[in-house]
Image (cartoon, rainbow, N blue to C red; front, side, top):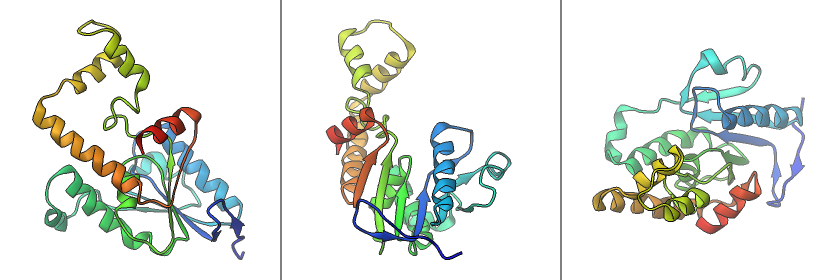
Length: 212
């Protein structure tokens, strides 16, 4: 059947939507959300594609039955030309994903770092990020405000495992802090290149506003 068209908030008439999610490995809430979203959009008549990297067909092929999925290799021989830093590796993946995103009217990134990768490439269609939550390992305080408050309130004290984990990351050495700060700035810059960012909860929305 001919795809239906729908007017979305960006003011763009859409037909093909590509969902961009980093991995489908172990079952998780974000992965099921992505699958259900693809199925629901397809049911509305959109031409829906999913592009990802790591993919376990034993778990996810039955969930994606009847849906179009492109699973790209996470690493490739030519990736070395982008360097071996974290940002270099992400840039390499973004460039490998780009040909599979070119024909979409809207590319919708799900979990980080797909927001970074999508913001780093130019596409003819709209680029949006469905922010399930900002990357917590990058934005330690602003994406984890309650945990950060507990760290500040219990200096050196032993509390729950989550608080201890956040404190440990906050106390890494200066060189690691410099690398982390560079990634934080890059995440903000690439996300600000997107056409639209929307959150799935008030908590994520407030954190995203504080960060981006």
